[in-house]
Image (cartoon, rainbow, N blue to C red; front, side, top):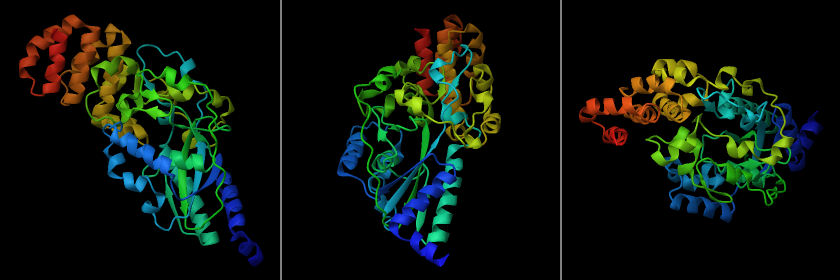
Amino acid sequence: MAEAQAAARTPEALKAVIRDKALALGFDAVGFAPATSTQAAKDGLAAFLDAGMQGDMGWLEAHADRRADPQTLWPEARTVVVVAMSYRPQANPLDQQKPKDRGAISVYAQTARDYHDVLKSRLKQLARWTSEQHGAGVKVFVDTAPVMEKHLASRAGVGWQGKHSNVVSRDLGNWFFLGEMFLDQELEPDAPETDHCGQCSRCLDICPTNAFTGPYKLDARRCVSYLTIEHKGHIPVDLREGIGARIYGCDDCLAVCPWNKFAVDTREPGLWPRPELAAPRLAALASLDDAAFRQVFAGSPIKRTGRNRFVRNVLIAIGNSGMPDLAASAERLSADESPLVRAAAIWALGRLNAESAACLAAERHSLETDPDVAGEWDRVRG
């Protein structure tokens, strides 16, 4: 036993047993990268931030120095173990025809449990085992710390950053989550994955809001996922129609990737979908107050967006539905306490029932104290 433990402490053996343990814990891919970033990655992040493409995501700029260098986050780090876990949907979201009175939620947010909790729980098991059995110092991260995880995943050979800026794998497609375990041990890195996008541009061509300024270049300020999840304010009028029925995130650029033919089913029950989130009724979601919203989305990443932003998204989808029957929901919410909700409701009502919107504008415009909401009343008045 002592000889086996000693052998496992050699860098080569430690790397092998960590990989085996990670796969046994349910991860679908494991890679090893040095705890450093390339200059190209640092320059790319700086250019993205200098162009202001991060929008409301101030945390990207606030922690840019830590994000650009893993050892700034933890000076003792020598190796980053990158793990991936599949969440492949049972059917391609682009092939599913939803009734016009239903909303679309990104596949990753339909899961039974928040993926952050699922991955962090498994990573903590891996970290505890690595520390207790092999004496290594460890820290784990899942999308909540300033880590350039896509860059590290590419360096670790897990996949490559595709033209849509997400990581693509020859074995998993692009339906997978990433997590990282930092080690204070220097292990041999895996060979970085090379780019296999070739001449394909499907992900760029399908974007409903033209968020890509070119291959590998995303302007987050136009991205539906950013607008419906991260953006705190009013969604720009010229982007609302492109959002369609998407009320939380967007899967289009992921769903169209041809490498998904190699994707694997998830083995993690926590990542199985909640059926009620596959195509929820817009009218029901528009009726949620704060308490009901928190109850419906308990344990879901959607909860972090908050009721007002989420209902804003629902109202944009209602306005895009072309269904006059949903105008009643918009009219009711045009008097909501939240200016964010009121503005979206007025826009939706104007799209579905211009006459009713104009009548309400005549009554309420002079009483409105929020300039953005007043502007929406101006628009429906013509």
